[in-house]
Length: 246
Image (cartoon, rainbow, N blue to C red; front, top):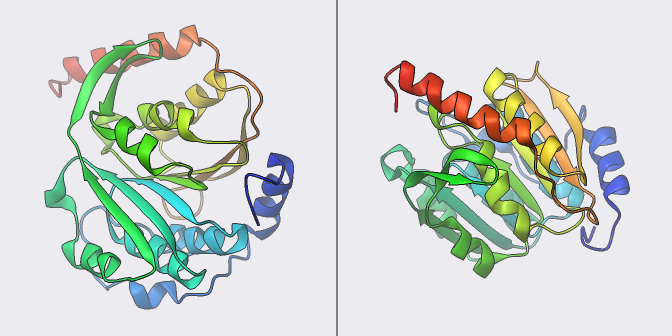
């Protein structure tokens, strides 16, 4: 399935039809060790990621937040004949190095790990934490078929990830958000939908592990200025400052 040649509606229909019965060419459980560390990808999310890559025929994945999910994505791409994995991480100490070593050993995978700090900056979207050096890499590594968002950690918020990546995503691109059962992640989804008229929330499952949200970009519509989104980001930062977590 060439995502650039197929309508967002057909991709959305495919995702809905296959969400409850995921299948892939790899044994996800065999890839994951018993102890996944402090912030692991959940087995349901890992299985669904592998299923999405298989079902949609993805060849290029952008990932925010390195981890065992990186190995699952790389293995799923390799099972489809190979592809590119671009992973953005701000804190290499959290990276399970054994997982990334296995990724690098896959001959059919063009993998790049981008280590870049988080920086709080002001933009038309508000005051947000974002990965400082990521956009240059996005420009070099595009196009992407799928974006998996599992970072940055909770206190920074994940709103900026899609704002930063969106200019490099074409019609039919699929965005997957982990931890979608949490209020912060659902707020991020609401802000994305308010800003991007061509974005559709295809699935929101708050029962599977920590929650999974799946969105599809249809294309053809320009982003809009969402005042409530921008104001909300300032409110978030004020709350963090009052908690002493700035």
